[in-house]
Length: 113
Image (tube, rainbow, N blue to C red; front, side, top):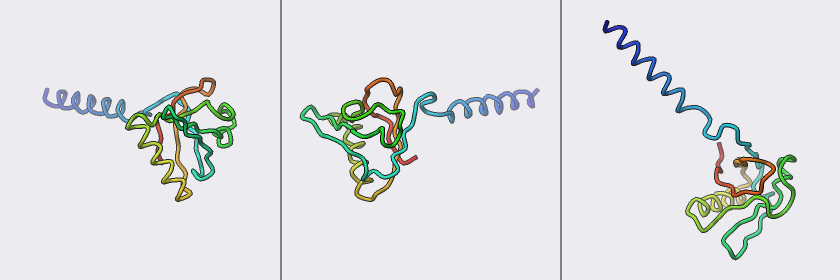
């Protein structure tokens, strides 16, 4: 009896662990920027930083100028922009998430993972 109870708890823990360790954004598309210093961007008065040449890093991305942006009016956007600037100074790469190539959108998931 005790073995069955313990076995059920262990099985429940394994299932819960597997559910939590799955991909954070399954189905989303990640773009690898190999060298942040090669990234072109434009700052605008509304607090956005437009990433202008994402298609140079992934040919599936929408071309040119105003399709992907960072909103620097939020703390997340400020952190993202700071990461890009620091990685640009070091010539390091990072990844970011595009939910869908066909839609212009805000970039939110960024990091060196």
